[in-house]
Length: 328
Image 1: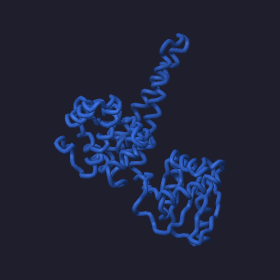
Image 2: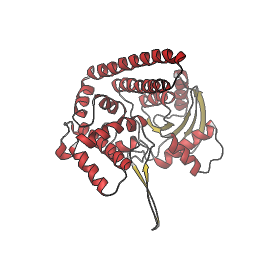
Image 3: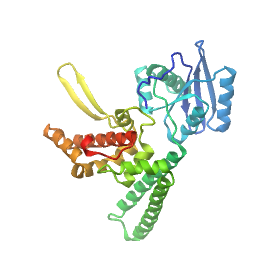
Image 4: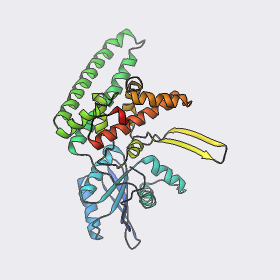
């Protein structure tokens, strides 16, 4: 999460980190105002090198920030968290916009590390909490399934008007991808059933009309739940489902759609459930009808239902109670 945090330390030591595949560039801000640059490999040996640097400067706890770049940033973020440091995984788009607003004209790893340190001090972002091993494994499975789904759809599209000489090749690949996708879906189910807490949460989520078994699994893997954020609107922002407005003076009153800065897996996973909920979830159907009566465009209504579904899912998990239509 990237909005301001209430638990930000009064006088923090800050470490801005620019992470690449093989290396990391950092800038450490010390209590006396000094700025210490560092560079180290993006691996366990490099993390040990960073530990020695922090020990040399007598740093026991600090606020570290790095952009969320998937497999490149996760190991370092997890290591920092395990060392007792406060870690923020930052949206790269927000950091880029901050650099533009600061008038940054050049871009190097060292400059980016300094900008991230500045961003931390200016915006005081929320701390990141690593997922449990069970959730991390579930997330890996659902993301791999999504990758295969895209590959499978691409191959199916190639069957349209293809030459007969290559049709058999495409069909074999479609069959192989379909089989692997089915195996992954079975593994997702097994992963949830193997962990009591995941199984209980999955059961709660599927009580929501419109949320099926697969969508519930994706929510468990990707959603910022009550153990990570305090409010449902923060979970919606994490998913990129927070609406944006543009107002200026008396003449400009525009809605700018969704702030698509969050988790794309969640937005995609909630689209079809929102369409189902429009038909079969009475409170959400009534909610959509009210928006339509106010003249809201069709896609705006669907996006509002997606956001409402996420709010309901958050509430179900927070209160550990099945979906109650009378409270929606």
